[in-house]
Length: 391
Length: 176
Image 1 (tube, chains in turn red, orange):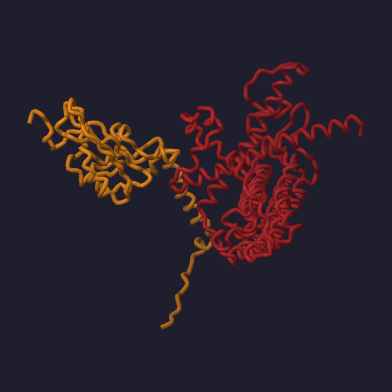
Image 2: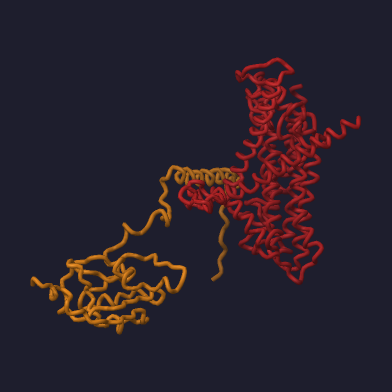
């Protein structure tokens, strides 16, 4: 590798990381929290936070700031978290108490590195780390986040966090197995663990869950549809358990354990747990989009090289400025499509959270080990059989 | 007597949970949709919508002083309200009405009339005790201020809130 190549790679990776984390994911996290509050309110026949406008109300926007519908709420929340007293109880193990919040936030952010969130812009692939074991990398790193919760539970030196930590250990370990197994059929079909390659496979052969996006739809795909839907359901359920979302929020369960593993936390440390949960949710939804919903692909929209679309759009000669500009535009549209899909999935997450009650602990374990695990395992053989039969 | 509750025998469909989960999702979605279409009645959005139009006639809001139709202050500074006021919110300093005044035969009027709205409990006893029907509890309920001094309603403020009111007492009316 040439010296300039290394500099180019470093610079583009940095730019992509900054774009992804600071311009897309973190704002998305805060507005997911807002959406959570608003949608839960609508579901429960309430209004929700509809007041906080942007700081415009300070400079005379008071009359029309209600029309902003509380969009300033995340900013107000952030300010509140920053200004609260950061209280560390005297009875905790200080080192682990400080490490735990970071350990729950960082893995969620690191997993995003392997997600292909767009096609290409000016020839640069829109994935921070284009590694050929992307899926395994995501599973490996996301399982680190359990340490954050366990350490928080243990270092807090208090009974409710401790119980929350124990619950989270067993829950995450059991559901991780099921999650890994239910992703295997997708790998079998796509023939690769590289996430960009899985997306490319879906562009050419139709999305996993909607094979009809493929113009050359084939009967064998219809057969494969059955195991894919089973895989999708099991994968989504394990994803809920993995991100501690209701109906699987046993580590947190407010009604039994006060606030579970983060009972003793306050201020920004609590905020890190909170944001970590939502970042994990976004990373999980992004993974579901990549594996089942065709990533950044939407039928008719070309990729960043101007290939593959059938939307009528003026074409320019290769090498001209307008040609590059149009391609950059399509690249940005691809990114928007990807995060649009993620947003729809997040809304489904929220919708399910405010519908279902929490599982009892034994029900959770039974569901994980006796049903989902077996279904996922059988599903692998089913997929393999269908693949062997049709090819 | 102890007895055993038989667990219900669930069908395989019920054991799968999925149909009931879908039913639950449908219910929450219905609520969401009704809310978005504005069909659900929600609480009053206070600063934009107010109670004013829903207020009953007998509502007891801020006590105010009223004038009669001839622009005479009805209060004759008898101080009955000051004496009956349970939290002692009312302070009256009476004065004589000068002889050259149109209303000289009334003899007395309040020089200063102060109601401390921090102390006022909106009981309405002042209104009931007033022989001149000069003090009324109106419908203003949002009495706010940033200082204690601001919360003391003086005579000018009380007349501003009260305005004019025709009453049953006509004994000072020169034509009757």
